[in-house]
Length: 402
Image (tube, rainbow, N blue to C red):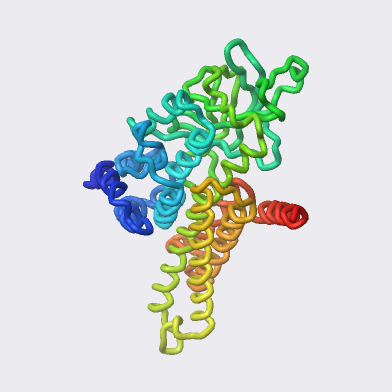
């Protein structure tokens, strides 16, 4: 299906990068072309099956849009977070379920980019870039609680427990996971000597003995995602698998979230933008009382609200990405971009279903899928109410400090 298409190659991306286009327009157009050729035509198929069951993975790997931010010294393209956000929006516009494979891999490499040593980057990032491989991701726990535990072992660590949601669990080369100290060994100084908390993060090759992947987890939306629970049974990893930066857990999590949230918000914006465009097209064709429904003030106002909110989401996300690119961690901005984008995508897709009327609830039309996809973004890295609570707490702390 998609694998038979002639597609631009990695060399095309490299040429675009050298051009340094204003506002990423060349890169945006490149990603949009891939979306139109490969994602949209196959979106309905992969609503019924995982990305692991078809030809789409080959399309993704040949697209040049995988692991965009791996530095050039490790055989990557060396793009910025702002570039990754632009691509994330375009891919989610086509199918956020299929795009989850690229999204999860991009998010998984973030901790390495921020906290990995050169030796770790060469070991874990270079193969991804050279062989166009995926990385897997277990989201950072929102409540600082993890079902995965670790303890010191000779020349490394031993992991036991479960990661209930792991993206790219069967297609990834390795997975990023977080674990808590095994309390039974706390007195034996199981934590690395530099740590000031009970949590740590690791990069675990998926072929490691003792690692068991469950059957596919089927979500409400984004159903093409390669999502599984992963069981760790005395899984041993060496010292290079431990990310030193996770010794300061709060700073570690905030730094990663500052780059994760704009990418996820970009995906939300892509889903909402697709719903808006489909709604506009339908409103111009559907007629009541002898005129297109777009001529009715109620529908026109609804479309106007959808359009302004999509634009606001994109601008807030772009600002958060720019700050993070320049190593500015603004707790309010990067949490706000994801909270707003999630809420906006849910409202816009719900309005799209309403504009389509009875057809909006039918699987024959794409807006019901978009609404489910928008809701599913809340699964990853916090729901909108959780993020709002964090924004309020951080904002009050900032006011009190001044």
